[in-house]
Length: 96
Image (cartoon, rainbow, N blue to C red; front, side, top):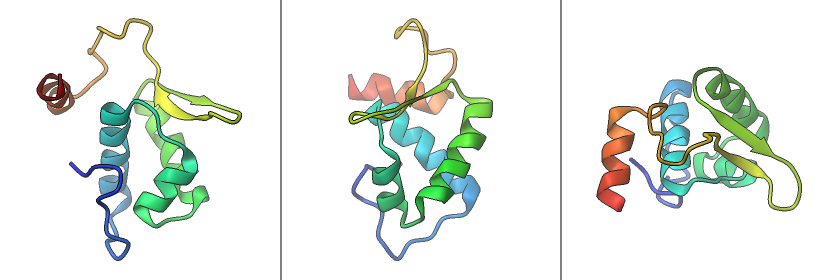
């Protein structure tokens, strides 16, 4: 999994791979702005918006607007990891 600033500008991912990396970033960083994701993946904000539209259909995500806006995982109970893939749970345990 890539960290927020490790994506080389010349590296292009497929939409599927990029969406998986976006989800991983949200799991590990808990909050990401549209602008930051577009910078990381060297794509337009519109591309990230399309990715987020897709991801919100399969993951519990919330978009926050305003100065501190961005995307985050939207779960009521922060201890409820049922929405995460097993590899994301393993990452969170490793980071703890």
